[in-house]
Image 1 (cartoon, rainbow over the protein chains, first blue to last red):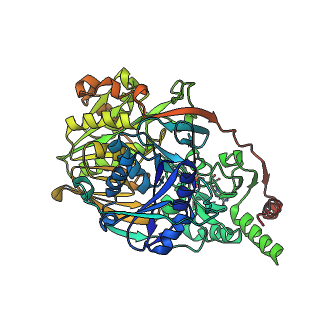
Image 2: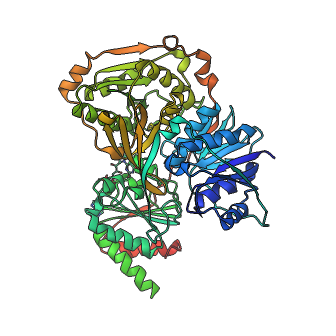
Image 3: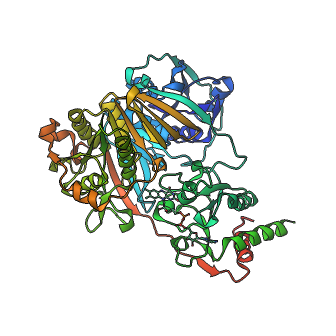
Length: 321
Length: 261
Ligand SMILES: Cc1cc2nc3c(=O)[nH]c(=O)nc-3n(C[C@H](O)[C@H](O)[C@H](O)COP(=O)(O)OP(=O)(O)OC[C@H]3O[C@@H](n4cnc5c(N)ncnc54)[C@H](O)[C@@H]3O)c2cc1C
C-alpha cells in the first residue's frame, strides 16, 4: 500500500492528540509515515507514533524548522516525490499555511477543515462542513498528491492492537530563500489550564457579553469545573478582554463538537453557531426569549444567568453530597 | 511603499446562502458584500497609509461583475485604486486557480506588501495567502492577530495565536500577510469616502491581459471535486422555560436526566 505522509507537531517530544488522530485516519488510507523534527524525539516518542500506526518515522535533522516553519513545505515536497497516497496535516493556522504552499509547489489539490477522511476507489474522500456547519460536503482531490488538513477531534485516536517496529529514516535540510525570510522571533507555549482542551472536551461551558465583565467569568469556570468541562467564550467577550482569544468559539475561533455545550449570556450569532452547532446537546441561559441561541438549545432557561447559574451550581453540589 | 489588499465579494452570511445543483455557492437572490474579514485587512492597510502618507494602496479582486462592489466598498474606506480581474473562464475556479490569477495580477502591481484576510467568509479555506506567497516566492506571515509594518527597515512583524503557542514572527518585505479579526475594528466608510470612491480609478483586467491561459483556471482546471453536498438537518429547538425562581433547579434536572450530573 502507498505511504501516507503525516506531519506530526510536538513540543519537546510531547505529541498532542491531533497528531495521533491523523495517524489513526492515515492507517485507513495507506501506510502511515510520521514526519517530525525537533528536540525530544526519543525512543519513547517513536514507540508512541508506531503504536498509532506509523510504519516509518521520518526525522528531519534540522534545528531550523523551529525558527522557519515555512521550511516544512520543502520537507514535505521532497518526501512527496515518492508519490504517496496523501499528505495529512492539522487544520490549524500552522498546518493550513503549510498545506496551501505545499499544494502549489506540488501542483496538487488541497482540502482543509476535514472532519473525516476515508479511503475511496479514487483516493481519499474528505468530509467538510460549509456555511456555519449548515451543510455537509464530500470532496476529493483529483490532481496531484492530495494535501488534506484535518480538524482536531475528527476521529478518536485508536492505538493498534499489536506493536510494530517502525522503520526510521532521516534527512537533513537546506532551506530555500523564501522560507528563511519568515522568522519566528519568539514563541510562548501555552500552559495547560488544568481543564480539558477546548477542542477535545466532552463538555464546554461558554460565556458571552451577558457575563458583563472579566470577573464574572469565574462563574463560567465554576460551572465548567462542576461538569468537568472546558471554558469557551464568544467573540464579544473576547474582544472586551474578559477571556483569552484562544478560548473563542466560532468562525474566527475554534470549532467544538462536545457532548454538551452550555451557552451563558450568548445570543447565538451565526458566526458563533459556526463553531458549536454540531454539539450533541446544547443548553442556553439567556434573558432574551428571542435570542437565536434558543433555536438550537435542547434546554433553555429564559432568565438572568446570575441567578440561574449559582442556583444550578448549588444544586449540583447538593446532589453530589 | 506599495500595498495591495486582496479582497473578495462574498454572499452575506446573514442572508443564509446555500449551494446550486452543480455544487457552487448559490449567489442568486443572496445579498453580496465585501467579506467582513477583508475589512480588517483593508483597515490594517489604511493604518499604514495614515502613518506613512506616501504609501500607495490598491485593492485587487478576482470575480464576476458584481465583485466590483467589494472594490468600491474598500475604496470608500480609503486607499487609491482598484483592479478587478474578470473573465468568464474564471467561473468555478478553486483556491489554486484563484491564487494563480491573483499572483499574475500581483506581478504586474509589484507591491511591497500584500495583505489578505485570514480567510473568506464563504469558502473559508485560508489557503489563498500562502498560495500567493508560494507563487511569488515571497515570505508569508499568516493569521496575524497584530501587525506592525516598519517601512524604514522593510520589515513586517506579526503576533499570532497558533494552536500550541502564541508566536511573534518577522519577515522582510516584500511579503504576504494575512490578518484576523483580532487586528482591530475596521473603520466605517464616511459619506465623503463613499462619494470619493466613485472617482477613484478602477481597472478591469482579463486573463489575456495577465497572460494566464484560460485552461489553467475555471471549473475544468479544478484540482478538487465535490461529490455531494447535503444540508444538515436543522436542529430542533427544545424547551425554553422562563426562570420563575427555579430555572437553575430545572436545568439541574435536565443535566441529570442526560447523565451530565
Ligand atoms: C467575520 C466575523 C467573524 C466572527 N467570528 C465570531 C466567532 O468566532 N465567535 C463569536 O462568538 N462571534 C463571532 N463574531 C461576532 C458575532 O457576530 C457576534 O457579535 C458575537 O458572537 C456576539 O457575542 P455575544 O453573544 O456574547 O454577545 P451579544 O450578541 O451581545 O449577546 C449577549 C447576550 O447575552 C444576553 N444577556 C445579557 N445579560 C444577561 C444576563 N444577565 N443573563 C442572561 N443573559 C444575558 C443578552 O440577552 C444577549 O442575548 C464574528 C463576527 C464577524 C463579522
